[in-house]
Image (cartoon, rainbow, N blue to C red; front, top):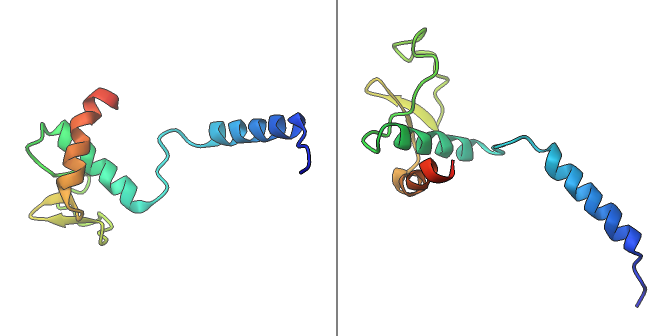
Length: 100
């Protein structure tokens, strides 16, 4: 076996801390994570009564014609929705007001 220098672990630790602090806060690294986060926030902000996601451009696009509808986020009956099953995001939304 070879002896690993303490300096190696110090440098490795510094690199890992630098990477950790260079990441964006509350970064979402995939589309479905962002959509589920928006759905969870919608549950919590609507008092757990509606799964409609707040469409930020509703003032300038009230008919929801320019939402960039995809397979994940879609419009239905004049509502901006997420296509994922809301069961898990509902459970997550119960903890959102407490943990943020």
